[in-house]
Length: 442
Image (cartoon, rainbow, N blue to C red):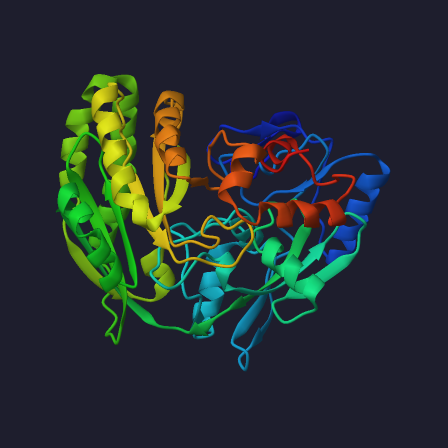
C-alpha cells in the first residue's frame, strides 16, 4: 500500500504510520477548474479542505475530517522556459518524476532533499530541504506560484509582481496549506551538472572541531552521527568537471540497498525487540559503511532510497549554535539510559527571505533525530526538543514537534506577517485543521 493510499473505510494514513484521518470525502481533481469547484462545494457544505501529497510529513499538517484533495491527476510539466531558465510544474508531480524529466531535458534543480518520493507542492509547503553552503531549500528555488484560495479564485504571484503579490510570494512558498491550495510551481533550473560525492567515516569530535572548515570548503556538507558511538559518516558533494563515475551496480546495491535498507531494517527490528543490544549494534553499524567517492548527475547524488520506516523530529538552529547543540545532545543521550538505534542527521542552509522558512533571516543548521517506526520515541524526542528550543530552534513543519503559535511567534520575526495574510485570504479558516490551529493560532 502506498503512503497516500486509503486504508479501510476511507481512512488516510501517513508514511510514518503515526497520523491517520477519516475525511468525509476524497477528491482527485484533474484540472484547476475541478479543484476550484471542489473548494467551492466544500465551502457550501461547511466542510474544511486539505490537500495531501504522499504523506511524508510526520505531523498532522494534511489531516482533515472534511474534504481531502488528492493531487495525483495534477501532474506533469506545464512548460520549460530556457530563456529565463525556469520550469513550471503541476503541484502533484512527484519530485522523482520531475528530476528524471529535467535530466532528460539536460536540466537540474540546484539543490534537493535526500528523498524524492514527495510531491513538489507537499515538499515545498513544509519546507523540505537538503544541505548547502549557498543553495537553500526547494522553496528557495521557487520563482512563481499559482494557488486556489478559499473563495475559489486562482491567484498567481512572484517576486516581480505588485506589492501584494510579493507579500503573497514571500509567504506562500512555504505556506503550510494555510493560505490556499497550490496548483502550479515555477522553479529555477540550470544546465545539468555533475557532482562528486565523497563519503567518509570520521570521529564526531573531529567533525565538531572542524565543522566550520568542512562547511566552508564544500558546496554541500552533511553528516550522520551514530548515538552511543563517537562515529560519524560524512558526505561532501561538490560540482565536478567529470567524467561520470557512478557507484557500481553491485557496490550500490550493497551500500544503499543491503546495508542502508536491508541489514539496517533487520538491525532496527533487533533493537526494538531487545533495546539493551542497541549500543553494541550502533558500534557495528557505524563501522559498516566504508569511504567511497563517485560522480553522477545531481538527483542521483543528493537522493537515496529510504525503505526503513521511521518517525522523525528535526529542528533548525542558528548555524553558529550547531556544535554546542550537538554536544548537549550527545551528553543527554549518554546520561539518559535511552537506546537510540537511528543515526542523527546534520545539514545546513543559508538564510533566505521566506516568511516561515526554517532558515528565514538566519544561516541555519538542521539536526534530525529519528526512531524506528513502532519504537517509543516520546522520551528521546522530548529531551532533544528541550535542547533545540533552548537554542531558539525552529521545528520542521512536517516533522514531530510540540511547539505552538506562542513559541513560534518568538522565533520567527515575520510570524505576524504570515498570520495577517492568512486572515485576509482565509478569514473563515476553510483550510484550518488541528495542526494549523496549534502552530498558527486560532
